[in-house]
Amino acid sequence: MNTKIQIGVLISGGGSNLQAIIDAVNGGHLDGQIVFVGSDAPGAGGLDRARRNGIATFVVDYKSIIRDFKKDPRKALLPDDVDLGDIIAKQTLFSDQDDPQRVRPFMMSRVLAEARLLEAIGSHSFDLLVLAGFMRNLTPYFIDRINSDRTSPRIMNIHPALLPSFPGVDGYGDTFRYGCKVAGCTVHFIDYGEDTGPIIAQRAFPIEAGDSLESIRQKGLALEWELYPHCIQLFAQGRIKVVRKEFDLGKGGKVFRRIVEIG
Ligand code: GRF
Image 1 (cartoon, rainbow, N blue to C red):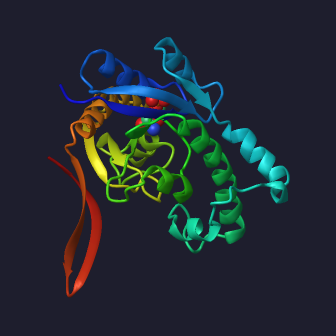
Image 2: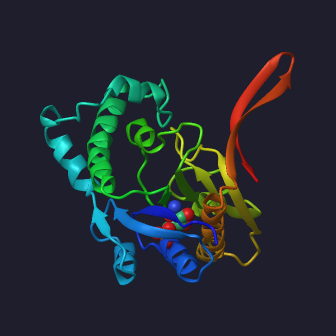
């Protein structure tokens, strides 16, 4: 029997992926234990799923934190260990062309929320943080405090598209509206960008003539509910390794990427 890993989960909505992970744990298919479920939204349906399974829950109300910040940014008290310049330099959510007057307040307000998030999860010890329909971008401030060992990331996410295509908030919708013939989902580690981290696994399915956005979403979710517990189990078994690979582009050009290898 593998040792059980401690899993923290963050959600924003209904928590169907959370439910799939709970079912995998309860069914003995996942060598882990969910130790908390947190949400950025007080009314998230997934919180009830957690409570029904006796899992500790908390809410960090991003909306009110961001609203209060916008009311009077000068009143914002950032934690002492915040280096905003370092955060902005590291993050790749925004490019150098983006207006710093927009980037700076975005990062400040998210760091304020993340400080509360870190406080809430601080009382739990966990091996893996699973984002399951968590609709907030994370900044290097939070990521670096969770990924204490940079070489072995421990924040996982599931995205409703075949990355790197269609990052962002509506993967199935973007795939459908583009006229793609295949849709799918991706499990990846979080890095400093939006849905750009090392890919752990993907599942694809054909888009058929009679498919609607709703039928595509349902087919995709059914695959997510299999794929996510599978990836978390690979992590629990210590079979996931992230390696830095260099690729020769010819004419002296090289590119490198952190790639996941499954042992
Ligand atoms: C899922 O499609 C997931 O890929 C995306 O959020 C959607 C809703 O997830 N990140 P859930 O039902 O709240 O787990």
